[in-house]
Image 1 (cartoon, rainbow, N blue to C red):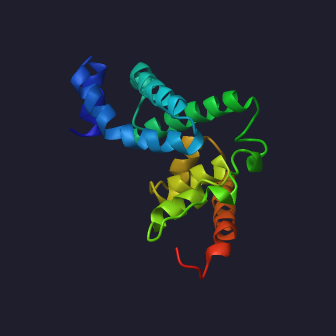
Image 2 (image 1 turned 45 degrees about the horizontal axis):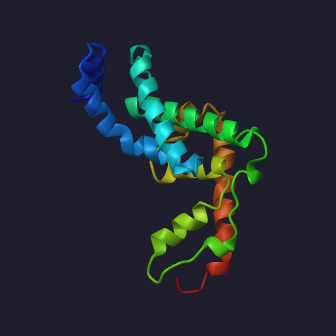
Amino acid sequence: MNDHDLVAAVLKGNMKAFAILVEQHKRLVASIVSRLLDDDMEREEVCQDVFMRVYEKIHSFNFDSKLSTWIGTIAFRLAANRLKKLKGRKALSGDLEAVKEPGREDMQVEANDYSSFVRSVVDQMPAAYRSVLLLYYLDGYSYPEIVEITKWPEGTVKNYIYRAKAKLRELMEPYIGTEI
């Protein structure tokens, strides 16, 4: 079932179609939300809120973008708002360096577990950098799609990706030439 048919069926009240929509997009939503929120209960609650919001607002979706981009935007905004609420300050638009910086002692790497190691390094990055970097490289979103999801100017998105790559190089530098 393509996105147009799926949205049309949901708009007609077909709950099976909505279940399909949730199934198709739950990994995307979980991925975006988990990049911003550390607490499992908060992540689960925000993921549920995302799909409730999708159901409530599906009538306003007009295919100006891909359905996944629209849902990703909702996920990002709800997770960012929850993070701001939890931090009690503007964690994403303010001091980016203060969002999350676990110490190197958290980086216990098992032999031959490179992907886990890379993830632990990426997790040390500020949430805004981590989010745009993963949206671009892991999820394959273009700059315009990331702009639509985050509602940040394209220059900001490009800057954050540039800074994220520089931060990743900085974090990886002590491990270059060592066996992982």
